[in-house]
Image (cartoon, rainbow, N blue to C red; front, side, top):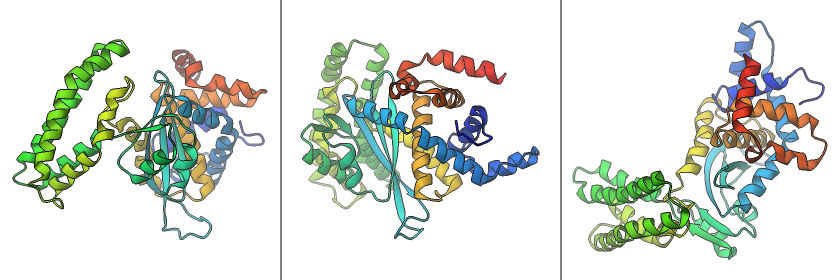
Length: 351
């Protein structure tokens, strides 16, 4: 996989799964290898990670194409500290962006590092995109959608619910906040029960509308009345105001069978990065942050599709050096793999 180095496909997969799945920084792995009588420096492991990410750039581009080619996507972002960024202090906050989408049966997620949380990256990534975009109420997404007529914004009920939960836990008299939570909870119950029935898309949408729209109409009426009596700056007032301001986007999930009430699958996809960040604290350079994005993208996409992270990386690191034609990279996409066979073959190899 990395010409001129000692690293095998198995060792490389082991090191990267330790870092990006089990959140074990390279310096801790260095100490573990030393205890086993092997010297593998943290710098070597860092160099391997960056070299592997660079070689897998064509696969990352295919991930990007799959996400942009789907009928809908979800986006989220989380802060990260990156050292040695030109013209910036090491304490300056940078951001890891996440997009999740692609085929419903074989979803893809793509991480991307940017120095800022501004408009530049989402505007570039979503340029000429046509489809649904589900995100929280961050105004940058509204600005992108305003500039791209093909984008239909979908809101996130989890964010609305979170605000009512904050109001309920902060007040001794939380009756109204708890009522808001229960009303929203009904939407989730319907979604969960209908998904479990595994209906045809048309049946699912018709039944979801039939059961959900009366609850939504009642909820909106309740919110409108509450907005006239609550203090806007209170936690309950903020919950009511946020939900009403996002209403058109919040109810839009009813328009497509693949849409869900919230953005939680994207938040769940970015959570491994957030957990890892607590252990390794920062990226040593922008180049290292870019490499981390590529490797998180591959690992989390594999996990979403039922692939053992070791198995998927080992398979990729074994096949990638043999690719002679650019079209062969498509063979490494989960949609083109026999997932059970990849997992089974790898486990047989390590045994």
